[in-house]
Image (cartoon, rainbow, N blue to C red; front, top):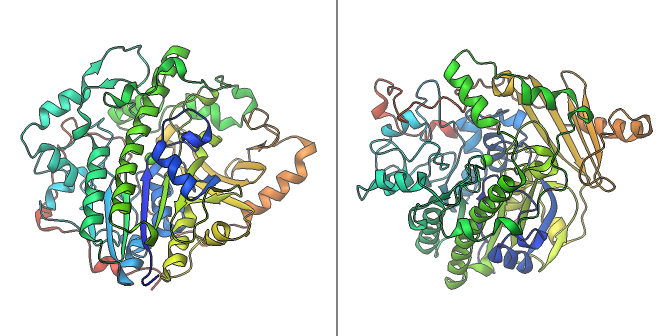
Length: 541
Ligand SMILES: [Ca+2]
C-alpha cells in the first residue's frame, strides 16, 4: 500500500445488535450482510451508554461517559474534548476529515440558545455557507435531529439537510406527506406508513452526501463519519420501505412480560414515577414520549415491521456508499466500520425504546469491519465496545491519540487471536428523566452481565449462556456470590478519571417550542461561529 488507509465510519441510530440479516432475524440487510461476508464482525459489541449523546461522544473521543463528561442526554460535549477526538486527530495528521448526518455531540433542544450548530434555536447564527469545523471535523454537513417529531426547521434555522429540504419551497408539503398515515393503521405506538417520498428522506440525503464526499476526496486520505438518524423512533418508514417486511412474518420476542418483581427496584420506579421537572409541559412531554403504552401482539408486529423497513432503507444507502467506494477503487484502501449508538428493547420484556434496563436488545450493537488485511467472514465473540473504534482507527492509520484514552484497538482481535475479557457501560441519570436518580454501572463479559446502581447498591446479574433471555436475576443468589464479587471488582477497576466538575445539562431533551424555534436567539448570536481555534484547547494538552 502506498498510503495510509482511509477511514469510513457509518452509523445508524438505535439499531439493535440482532437486527441484521446475518443474525437470523429476517431483517432485509443485503448490503450489510455482504459487508459481514467481506469482513469481520463482532458478535458481542456493546455500547458504553444506552442513549445517544453519551455513546456518540464515546465513539468520537474513545473515553467512557464519565470521563468525557456527557453522563446523560442533554449535556453538551466539551468542545476541547470533542476536538481531541478522532476527527481532530486525523485532521492534525493530514487527513481530509468529514462528518455527514446526525451528530448529536450537542443538545438540540435547550432552555436557552447555546451557540452550538446543533442547538435548534442557535442554528440561524451559522449561515448557509458554514461547513465546520465542528468537534475536530474540518467539513461537516449536519442533520439537526432527524427524527421528524420536530420537522426540519425552515430557514433561517436548520443546517444542511434542513436547508436542502426546504430549498425548493416545498418543505411544508413534504412535512405534510411525512405526517400522513397511510393504511393500515392498527394504532401501534409511534408507528405509521409515511407518505414522504424516500427521495426526500434523510437516509437518502446522508447516502447522497456521503457518495459526493467520497468522490470529491478520492485523491486524498480521508476520514469520514457518515451518520444515519434511523431507525430511531418514531417508526415512520416511508413507502415502499415500510412494507418491505410483512407484520405477519415478524417473529415476536419470546418474553413480552415485564416481571418487575424479578428486577431491581429501579425498573418499576423508572416506569411509574413522574419525571421530576418543574415545567408541566416538559414533564408531560417526557412522560408521553419516553414511555409507551403496552402494545397488542398485532401492534407490536406492525411496529417491528416498520422498524425493519427503516433499517432496510439505511442498508440500501450503505450499499450505495460501498458501491461508490468500489467504483472509485478505494475499497482496498479504506477501513469501513458499520455500527450504531445503542439498541431498542423493541418489545422485549414488555418494553419499547430505551431506558435504565440494560437488556441485550438495548446494550448490544452490531459492529462490522471491512478493509485492508481484515479477514473475510470472521466473527469475533469476545466482549468489545464501540468505544474501541478510535484506537482501532489510530492503529490502522498510524495516528496518535491526543492523550490517554480508554479505547483499545480491535485490530489484534480482527487480524490475530487476541482476546478481550469485558466491556463497560455507565450512566448517571438525573431524576428529570424518569423520576429516579441512578448511577448505573454495567460490566459485560463473554458469559455474564452485571448492572449495579452505586447509589442504592441494588443490581442485576444474568448468565447470558444459560439464560440468554435474561429472565433470572442472580444478583442476590448466594450461589452466584463469587461471580457477583468478580464483576463488582471489574466495575471498581474502572479508571478513576471522571471529569470534574461534572458538566451541567444545557437542556432536558424534551423542551420543544411549538414552532420549533420560538426561543429567542441570544443577542449578537448572528456573529457567532462554531468554535474553531478555541476548541483546540484540550484537557489533554
Ligand atoms: Ca440514538
